[in-house]
Amino acid sequence: MTSNSVYESWTLPAIREELKKRNANVFEFYDTIYACGTTEPEFKMDVPCQNKYKDAHVGMTGNFPQFTMKRLTEYLSLYCRDFDPKCKDMYEERYLRCYRVCTNPENGLTFILSIVWAEMKKSVTYKVDLSLYENGVVQEVHCKCGARQVPSALCKHFVTVLYASFRVFQAGIVLSELSCTQVLQTFHKANSHKGSPLKAHHLQTICEKI
Image (cartoon, rainbow, N blue to C red; front, side):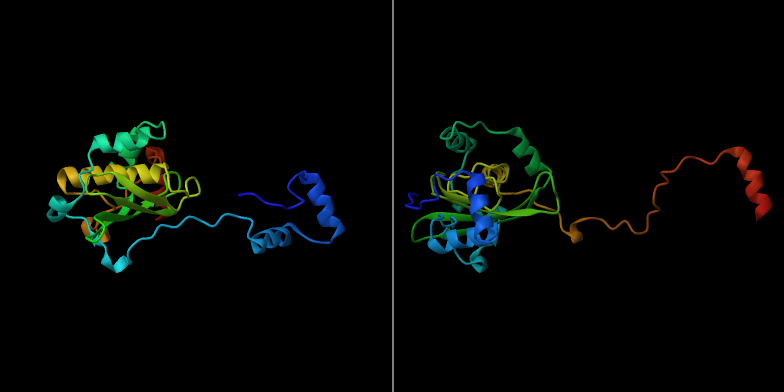
């Protein structure tokens, strides 16, 4: 985006010195920039309401876009990228918290909403939006992670959702995070002892104290 601001050519030390002269701080400086509209707006996808999405299941395989592994690799090749096996591992290790689908009959697009755990920090999740044509061609995508907040997002979270879409088309199933009711309870099991074993010559001392 072009700008006619006189501060474009200024170096960082010069900007700091000017801020000191004006008794201003960097936050006020950025507020002024945003107020002038010199920054590009954040990209947002036009997606359906969340209440129109449904969890992926076997019954929707017939109406799901024909998203094959070939389609996936073709899309990545547009950006000179190969499929990262780490994304397959993230899918199989259930990094997807949810995978929901909404079909728009008016334009023939299928929208996918997914929440993906961050790879290095399991306390952080990212929302991924994806839209596919009926023939499996990717129409638009958006990931909330800091790496790729652009229409052509190619972060691991997005590619993991792409791979999940291939598995949905292939088998009608998706491996998502297990809920608490899907895991067997373990409160009746004793915790394993991780300390060092007690030496035999200490047993007599303990018995005397008792």
